Image 1 (cartoon, protein in one colour):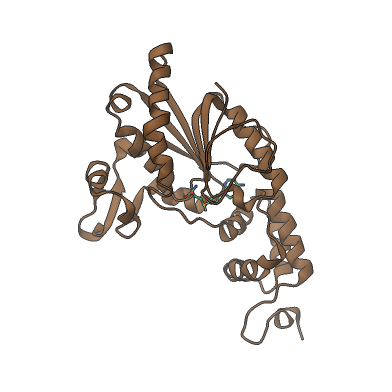
Image 2 (tube, protein in one colour):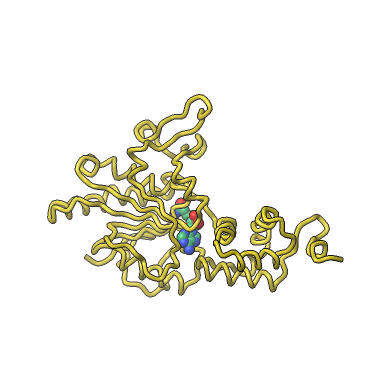
Length: 289
Ligand SMILES: C[S@@+](CC[C@H](N)C(=O)[O-])C[C@H]1O[C@@H](n2cnc3c(N)ncnc32)[C@H](O)[C@@H]1O
């Protein structure tokens, strides 16, 4: 029996041995910080099967060797795209946007009056297909003073090239925008017609305020010159182990301006991690002023 046949189970599915699982787990952890426990073996097998088919490979061992020998890292990106969970939505975990409106924006405005510096910088780290950074921009623009006299720039980063492509296109289906209030749709989206019927594009004057970039949060030194007023890193750290979360939290602390805020996902917490942040509310933390 050749290895291709041996590698296949009765229903044509390719088996992922324990040793191969460990190799992939180590590679994924090294490259993205994503920590896969034993229970994720079947998930990994299903998600990677399509990559094997795309590369016309018949075993996970061949796929692993393929990635290791690929100097371009294109397939490594394919692997990370396949295993990352990209679930997101507009106005997800809405209390963060209320907090932005009621607490963060007034604080930023006060800083503007004090220093005359009217630049607002924020970061959506792990932005997936863009719904989060666009929601941030909509929320900021709902404040007339920010809209009329501030220079707003949002950085939005992700490890997934596929997600970033979607985010940059700024085009969403009707289904995707069902969590967006009607007034916001009217103001900030263009409705598609003819062959674009049923699609909505974020207006260019809005999408240009967001700079999408591929960036791996495992990067040792964050290269950002200007400090951020706030950082959203929601539903990302949940995939990392505790030491990785701790390192990342400390890098966020350094990347924030004094008094700046870090928002994490609703099922996440910094409890149990060593960090310098002041706890404000569940999932909301502040750098001391
Ligand atoms: C579940 S989505 C969260 C999207 C959004 N923040 C939200 O809460 O709706 C997690 C995102 O984190 C990204 N991600 C995972 N590991 C990453 C890493 N090491 N560097 C950058 N992005 C990463 C994934 O590609 C994915 O798009």
